[in-house]
Image (cartoon, rainbow, N blue to C red):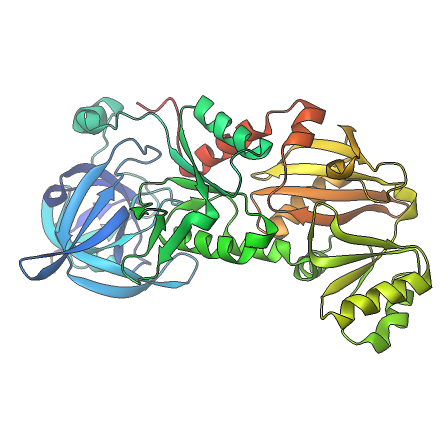
Amino acid sequence: MDINQFIVVGSEEWCSLPELGIPAIKARVDSGAKTSAIHASNITKFMKDGEQWVSYEIHPIQKNRKVIIHCSSKVHDTRMIKNTSGVSEKRYVIKTALHIGDQTWDIEITLANRDSMGFKMLLGREAMNGRILVNPGEGTRLKQYSREEITSFYGDLRETKKGLKIALLASNPELYSNKRIIEAGQERGHEVIFLNAEHCYMKLDAQNPEVRYRGGSILNDIDAVIPRIKPSMTFYGCALLRQFESKGIFCMNDASSIAQSRDKLFASQLLAKHGVQIPITGFAKSPSDTKDLIHMVNDAPLIIKLLESTQGKGVVLAETKKAAESVINAFKSLQTNILVQEFIKESDGKDIRCFVVDGKVVASMMRQAQKGEFRANIHQGGTASTVRITAEEKKMALKAAKVLNLQVAGVDIIRSHRGPLLLEVNSSPGLEGIEGATGKDIADSMIEAVEKRLGFSRNDP
């Protein structure tokens, strides 16, 4: 075989897919991947002349969601392909012409969700076999396009809309937090729609999963979902999020992260495992273990909390050992799962709420419990004020959000004689108290984080 017949490429190259109407797309050249892939959204199957076809949309330019190519292709095959996380997923395979350098040939390419990847296309070794040699030490060896040339290719295909379409998945559009997120999104030029989680339903289909809204409208043109799921809707809300995720839609807090944060026992186990300091916590099933359980958390007074408690609801202070035994055994007799936790007296009814967005603490406030209450909760008459958190407290808040894989989190910390202790992590933290106390525009920070994750820039041409 004459080596001079091969095209020598770098680690990334511009190519074109003329049959799909794509004059230029930059591909990641990866000989470690067997199959080629291209980012496709809104994939819909249909029949044409007795054969299965798919329609789909391609965003060919990196970090630019305004350019959309509407395509349709005959389905060449369907295959189980492992994604970058090692999880197998079913993908459509199409066959189309690839033009790179001065040569053109047919390749197989899968339609995949590459929204989080730097390159919208991946060129695998099957497409390169016998035609391409890779020099991984170089970037682009062949054609390099200027911004003006890309504009000349795609200028007439830019969307007229200037922003993203973001869905707020919640239950009450009148809540302060929900209204602020909608306002912040609109102020940044996006279309923000409110989706009542109870009015959404789904179609489970390996090839064409769907989420529909009351009346039958198919939710297939959404760029991102911001979930604010109330505790009573955790199971169904997480099911909806998994369905959105299966369609390649970015969710700001995914289903698994929300589910584990709502399970106080599981969350505490994960946090403790990763070295995040928490108050001494106990969990037991049998009433015969109650006395030792109480002793294990340094005796009364102690805190008893339901596993899915939130905003201070389902949290009880037992001031004596006898009261603790009565409450614990009463809960156990009802087959209700509870945690028993040591009471940090020196916190004096205060805690710190750190609001984490995309790996940053964007605001912090000190909450003071109402007189006679043991827990700081502004929902139950407590007060809030600004606070300067320590480096250790900041590190703890960021680590807790990272351990639970939450992009948005309200992390509650108390100060003790042995340093900061983490109380809990809320996956749908409220904005009213902390925005009011700090003057920070947290809703804007959340929308900005969505833009960053999707590679959206308001300065894109």
